Length: 262
Length: 322
Image (tube, rainbow over all chains, first blue to last red; front, side, top):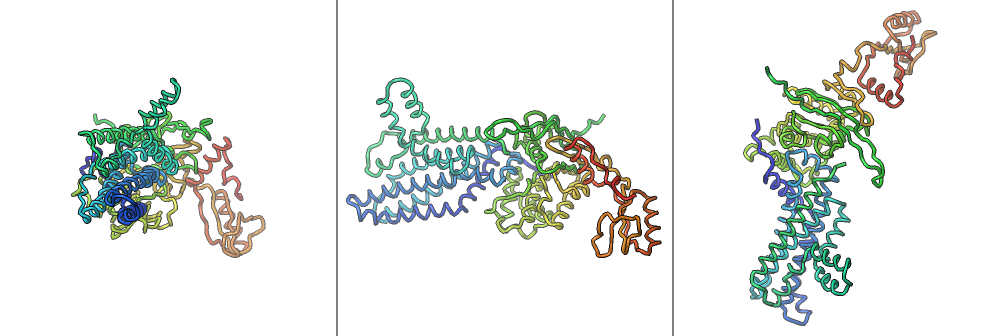
């Protein structure tokens, strides 16, 4: 007789590991990663063609590449993760196991986020090595890298949420829309002051509070140009971002738990 | 007094309807299904395409929520973790993660079942051996044929030693050898005391292995019972193959397949005796005599046709040469 203790974090870890394997065996991931590493590698050339401090341009281009390719990976790999399981009906055998639906979705999130952390680690490693070779200390960039990872947690959570609700094309569009809107949410405050009092202001306020404030997680300019940051800013921003991500993952789990597999 | 053991699977008053196009209207898929599967039996859920077999199975597994009714597995709600621990499931035309090897795949499912690491390696080897995939443990699933994928699906369904194995169209798309292997495996599961619940529209296979069957049509149960209860074993007619010219007054039901041979149907033993005498007297040769008993297929066709027309279909024996 087999002794079995199903459920709990064991199931989440198993699904996370499988998702990790799926993502790292996906060619799309390698294409994006190689492209990002090439961009970081040639940022030295870009710096030669541009007027300004070479090191600052390498840092700026490098951090932007890490952020952009991380988001692209989160969207392109993330939106298809749940959809593929449903489309190919592998989810049927998974949910026939003693596994709760939230464990399935949370496992998917953990797996993909682990891949993104690995990606960010590899890309940051390449950028830091480039800077070290030039005799420049890269460690001041760490706060920006940490908050890029936090931002990716939010994007991954949205990709999973939309992937649980609709097809990959629409999920990609929605996830990108949230990403862009999240970076521009500050403009809602500006708009608020220009519209008449009433419903329009309420909508501006509502959207401002609902959308993730991704600008708060963008420290690229601060670390590249050495601007001062308030004490404890990185910690608070990380708590805000991770908290927001958790809320979206919980929403995705709720949506997925109500799903019927027709 | 010993308490009666609960049914392996009990379904009461199960209803499910789906919304129509643009959410307009409701189309019933399962209507008031009631059945009970006893521990240790092989139970076949039969029905034409669209009868509601897969919908019923999805509700057992919690992939769909019933509109009404209750499903219990060994006395526990089918959605409970305790029930799931005792379940194994193979979907129709299974597809699995092609980026995994067979060992990685089974290890993943064993982990979901909470099987400890030290037990997993040996278990996977034994399971692959059971389904005839020994030596393929390190092959990527993308290199698996359809038949191999089906066997691997069976492997994931049985490796944790479940008490109830649910198989959705397990013989679908398999060649005769593959079907035979699946049949043997189902019989071996019963030998080991397991309960097997499977859906199929391949009636021959069901007839060979089922202890009891249920016939489903347009979401409604038409019949439930053992094959002995449902299918009459009396000879319904005889099929006689005659080589040579048929004597006058004897009509062939159809050509027998080989040149110069005819197939004649007679209703009973008296008519058979008469036919044999007539054929012998005419100098023709009797090649074979085949007594036809009612098959599950006959029953199935009869019940399905009756459900469609709400009038019983004519008995084939009544239309034969007497």
